[in-house]
Image (cartoon, rainbow, N blue to C red):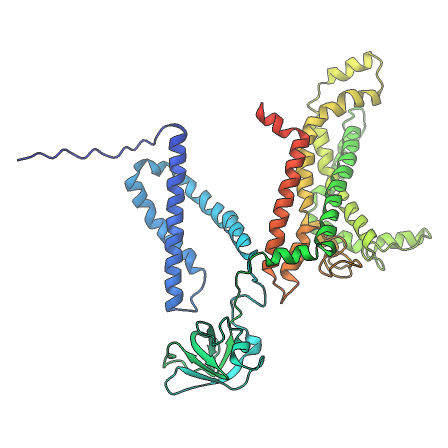
Length: 473
């Protein structure tokens, strides 16, 4: 009789050091990836059985697979229980960061838009008659094209493998049927239509497909009338805003830090208000104030005998208006940062400089500005990055301008690229104001270009600021 050795219990202690951390992250990623794969497979099977099943079922299936998979992983690796607190963070990271990035990259190489959305085209629906065998569909008329292949925009000449969308009298739940062949005005389906469904009309499916680099070629083909002017203005806007706001905030911060200034707290509070008021409110108020005909700014200029200024109707003045309003929004932050940085400077330095006979301006040059440089460098870099993608002030201020958000049109530029459009607003308008109102594919390509441009500019800024040298130390 042979005795069997008892199985050694699995260790509840994780591996030590970085190896344990990396192994835990790997196991969690495998768990999440497996749950997503199960959710995708189950949602695909559900879509085949129930074509009108809601798309969010993939989330339900994924969540269910994740809940069922966690006890299994805990049984295999008991020490993983201590790492489950990271699961919600990884789920939100995947849902709100990874998934949008993946979709953006994917759509950039497709023709996905309002016209090619993968949904039925209700605008060209036509009446149909179904044969007795429930496999042959006769179209009454063709709203577009001379034959079925043109009407359905089939990939193959006989439409084999394409989709015909059928509607019953209620038209609330369309049925998608695979086409075996088509010719003239007759469509033969791959499978008979269910007996419980009686189609009375049909339409095509606006498919989207991969088009390779077509979107990028389109962008660069008209780069001189859209991409490069918008990119140049984006740089000018971000750089000028940071410089002007920094100078204004620095001057006000130094003045209001003077301890001998009476009522300085009152001044600080009043100057802080533009930053405290939500931008979504104040920017639209500025839009009303700068209205050429009824705005209080031009009314005041008229009282002084000055001509009205086309603040938001002229391309140049619209750009100036955007910079001025952004100054109103941004200088309080720079002022507060200056005051906070000044509080870290030892007063003994100023006392010693005064004893040596240095004037106030000399003290600022020799003490204040050099000591503020290290504090201001990351603030200026982050401010440039923020204003490079400052969607809110551009969009909200120019909403009522001629041409809509983005400012007045510019001669020689694309209509979709207004005078004050930066890259982000241009991409947004491309996504929601062209080709049926939704040209996601072209906008996704623009988003990728913005990403690489922002990355390149950030690397240049970091190198110029010596950030990489500091990191190596």
